[in-house]
Image (cartoon, rainbow, N blue to C red; front, side):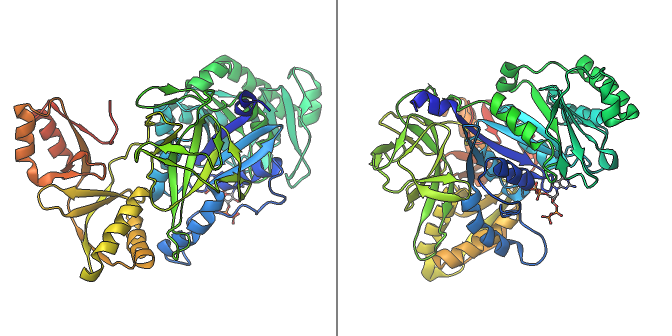
Amino acid sequence: MSFLEEIQKRRTFGIISHPDAGKTTLTEKLLLFGGAIQEAGAVKNNKIKKGATSDFMEIERQRGISVATSVLAFIYKDRKINILDTPGHKDFAEDTFRTLTAVDSVIVVIDVAKGVEPQTEKLVEVCRMRKIPMIVFINKLDREGKDAFDLLDEVEQKLGLKVTPMSFPIGMGYDFKGIYNIWEKKLNLFSGDNKTTISEGVEFDDLNNPELDTIIGEAAAETLREETELVYEVYPEFDQEEYIKGDLQPVFFGSALNNFGVKELLDAFIDIAPNPQPKQAEERLVDSKEEKLTGFVFKIHANMDPKHRDRLAFVKIVSGTFKRNTPYLHVRNNKKVKFSSPNAFFAEKKEIVEESFPGDIVGLHDTGNFKIGDTLTEGEKLNFKGIPSFSPEHFRYVNNADPMKAKQLYKGLDQLMDEGVAQLFTLDMNGRRIIGTVGALQYEVIQYRLEHEYGAKCTYENIHVHKACWVQPEDEKNEEFKEFKRVKQRYLAKDKQGQLVFLADSPFTIQMTQSKYPTVKLHFTSEFE
Ligand code: G4P
């Protein structure tokens, strides 16, 4: 197969949702279609279940599972499909944001009864800002839920999307009869009382055909006619170009648990979803069809075996062919590195691979050289953009609790930060270290891992910080910036990259600082124009 054909056949995407909307169930059903697993229940749920064990012990257990489910790949109708796993738990939102830099499109799962939930809103906002093509799947139609039109309105308003239904439900909950596939003009009906058997879709391009009344009953037929009429009137026709530009979002309805509407979703997905897209580096736009290898690290899994400092760096191939035992430039370190056992992911297995293509993810064994965001090339100095740090929500001083183990503590902190577990800020004034996280859970994780993997102990101390603001002066030499640095000295710190950060204690402080020093820009993310 030619290089271009390899690119054409790849679809790399993520599924995002609020916890419990059905992401795991949908993933599993997609894998079943791809023949990658044989039975339902095979994909281990990587959710953090509440209850039985303490949350961070659960995370430890999950870390084992999540290497396996980080990338789930399968072949369907001659397409190579890579699903990148995104943690649903809000404390791990930053992991999900980073994974979203490696997908070419996403599927958003929404629970028909709950509608748009907070975590969906946050994640979709990131996708919208990055113009990632999105398909919406409204799940659990076998249950009573919101009216389809109300839900479409909610998706448009709360998520700021422009939608077009590609299928439409016939009834809902107890009365759920099936789906009319607008995209293919097919009728897909449940058969059997328990709603678990599904008929092959029948072509039905004219809903005015009286046969419809016989198949689904007069009342349901009438409603379907009225509703589809309204769909055609109100919503724009599907346009693939607009979808790929991130300006139009097709919507499907179904029930992942009952495997209903999933095949329609998958068939449409492989038809319309983009293959590996060009990616912006600081230096230039890199096209997936370029023959030279480029790729970047979007995720690091560390210390699965505490006896060895083993880490697996997940690299998304942007262009070219990645080959085993071939030297590549690790741009940040300016060093050539080669890999004797790169892993590819297939279903739930990982195996050593000779070649990988754009859109694929390779797992590289690493002894502590990689950081999230690092770029690999054949020699060009490129740095891919779009893996910014976001301002954490929680801040605490970290103190060394065992003076004999200072070295271990700093090494451990260093490596955990490279992995993206949290962010470290060092105060300019006195060199004290502050850990910033998205959720409170990470503090427990850090303490636990420092002790178990590095033999170091730490304690935390509260500090009142509202937000970390990355500082961008218009001119480093101007008086205003010097004055800002002098007055705010106590609140200035460096992040791990050495960028200057202002730790503001309230929204009011940010506002005041901004109006007092208008030439000193404050940003809530580490990457700005
Ligand atoms: P998540 O990964 O998005 O967090 O959700 P997950 O797939 O785990 O689904 C959450 C719950 O919703 C599960 O039930 C699952 O069986 C159920 N579910 C998923 N799709 C459908 C659907 O189409 N219809 C109905 N009625 N339920 C659905 P659970 O009881 O929380 O978990 P489990 O004990 O079944 O694993």
